[in-house]
Image (cartoon, rainbow, N blue to C red):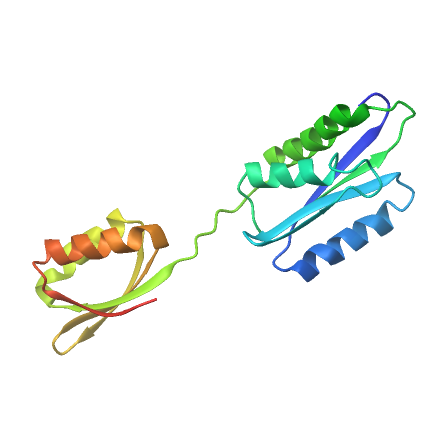
Length: 183
């Protein structure tokens, strides 16, 4: 903006070390830049950002705010600035860094990941279709094994759907399933 050049770079970062290595590599690649600002979020509790010499709160926070706006985790995002001679002021910097990060995220391919919980249940052969129907309804995944007395199933289910699934499967099968484990 206004003669400055802003370059955004985004990567997947499973761990803090991945994010820090990425930032170090960006700093090496763009060693002649005026600023290499960044934000990263690994999980809800682990994050970091830096203004890299820009006025406090004008670069790193807006970058992290865009990561959070898009509900991303395990990502690191840098915005490299080559100063063009025109000072943007605090508001202009916040907009420029935030807009660059937002546009980069909008254009990037993302992968939705769900941390499934595992429920193991057993049930009679006569309940197979009911259980499979509910597994599909709740967006879960099932792995079944036949036993001499019926079926044993390992069900991977999104955490927020686990309790409603268990309640409904117990009701639908009139309590004929046995919950072996939950985690």
